[in-house]
Figure 1 (cartoon, rainbow, N blue to C red):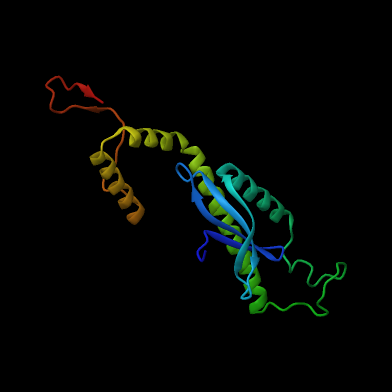
Figure 2 (figure 1 turned 135 degrees about the vertical axis):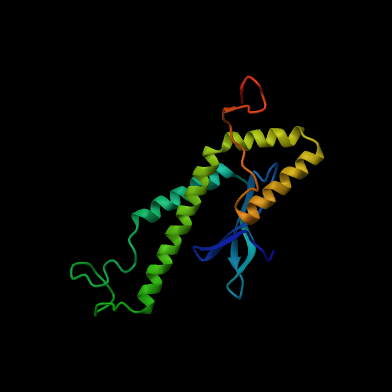
Length: 179
């Protein structure tokens, strides 16, 4: 397999997410793979073929919790009280800045993942309603919804707004209120 959804070095091996499967891609296949002669993921030495989404999320949050307890590698670089391998203070050079930038990128990616998870959890009732609707509607409605989702995905907006409110009916002689 040449394409993985994710691959990361793990104790001299590679931890990979090979595929998503099941109803609505509810499960993932995680594999532990040997390193091949080029240092890339090779032969599978272990796998979980049915890791559920909740388990993936729990593992990710546990790893984030551990990472939050860890200090950046440059924390004690110029300390007189903590052991460091550098005899001289580390200058604020490109390497140092790159290390700080890498950590910022990781924190930003983690925050985006946490925000996405929170958004999805908050919007779960909408997702469930959409699923029920798609299970029952005809193909024309499903295709229209797909086009609307595509427009939203491409432009970040819809060409219309739906709102709920009370307005006076100007066409009614009594000025009745309509909803």
